[in-house]
View: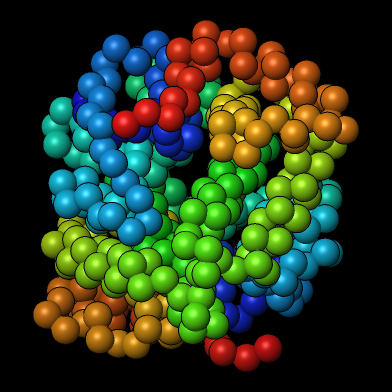
Length: 203
Length: 203
């Protein structure tokens, strides 16, 4: 299978973490796909008109996106349990995934806002991103004990990848005043699947 | 259960369509929650730090988001099959959901860009949104026969709600040159669950 991939995308990274956790990484052939909010990628858009990565093309030609759908597919193929099958465990994992993923969504929008020409930046948007980041990190700190007590799954992957992306683009300051989350993320970062998929700022 | 709700949100609407399709609509108590990219809603953010709707608070106090997680929960409680349990049917439904949902994601960003003060609008972003909309609608037109041949599920709900949101905020012009999608959406729009949940531009 072929994955539209980038070393800088946290959503791609989430898929690659799952690929390593499930033992399927060597089945995935990666192809570097450059995407941005304004430069559209014609070849990628033939597979995914949303112009987004990750997008996975299976050997039979069928196509999967977005990242969480690809992750559920890999978990299914491998027979692992990163997505719990039973409720309410499944709901808890999916809600935590949505929290990590939604955090990533607005971190990328925040970065996009910062990257605009200075005259086109919106101060109210920048302020709202900053306040949502504080609220999200505080909510994660409050939930860390429960997160740590749950079998490792897609929620952990999403939250861990979101914090790692914060380190990558917004710095390590989120740790201040959040000792539980700091400790949990150190353990996440030591997993071989996480080490093997580090974000890299390169073409 | 209590749903953070708005009559203008297409993601809330997706949840309400599923609530009606599963027969659970009268179990949901709605509370009007105003959200925007720049005005944060303190009470909502205690339930969901991402400041997003829909957010569902269950009777035991546990909280669910985003929209697709809430939809899967309702489908599970009702014992319906809007989310197929078996693969590859499940993957097809989830990939179509991601297409409809991703379409909505950028339609809302497009509208947000249009709503900025004129001097803060980015022409390259506006142009990219327009081109992605064309590509997405063309991809949907090509897939309409397959969509229509599949048992009704979460993919149909997401795509139908996205097209309805296009009507609501960007007009009906998407139908030009897309006769299959036009016909399919007319049938979608005639479903009681869709009629009961029409988007309304009111406070």
